[in-house]
Amino acid sequence: MQEINVILIDDHAVVREGYRRLLERDPDIKVIAEGETADEGYRLVCDNQPDVVVMDITLPGMSGIEVTRRILNKVPEQKILIFSMHEDMVFVNRAFQAGAKGYVTKSAAPEALIEAVRQVSEGKLYLSNEMAQSIASQTISDSGKDIDLLSGREFEIFHLLVQGKTLNEISEALHISYKTVANYQSNIRQKLGATTAAQIVRIAIDHGVISSVDKS
Image 1 (cartoon, rainbow, N blue to C red):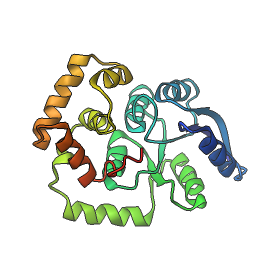
Image 2 (cartoon, rainbow, N blue to C red):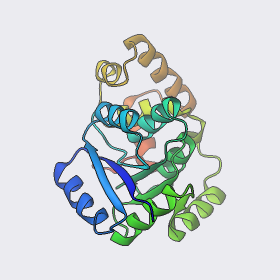
Image 3 (tube, rainbow, N blue to C red):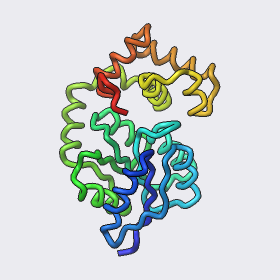
């Protein structure tokens, strides 16, 4: 089989080292570069265009979902696999909507990541049977939840807000004006029927975007 070149994007060096060793147990997989921030990951991928990008969601700067969207705007054929601690289906759905080809949780068996990289490199979609079943059940039970009304950019800002980021910090991270962020915040509150920051956080907890003690 032809060698599969991979770029790893995760903000923890120890985590990257562990998964580099895991992936390179497979003689057909080679990690050619690593990034620890959203901006660094974006540049590495656009410059090197690997066979597969393995990317976390929670990154300094913007989220891996937003980086996925930006990479695919620049390199539409790039194959991206999201590898994250987030197990709630709202993140899985958002990742695929952004254009990711696969999603693996960090609690999955080590072999799952290798299999996912192989399948994504071949142009296939990858999602474990357990997660596929969970998506199906949530589609039936949660089809009308308000959080689905948020656009991709609104969800990105919503996620940053509930992590406690200020409007100035979000403006700097996403390279947009303070006024634009404030307008997004207003739209988010309107769509979610929330008038206070506490209500927004409560909605995020209820929908699994964060836990009661933020684990991102």
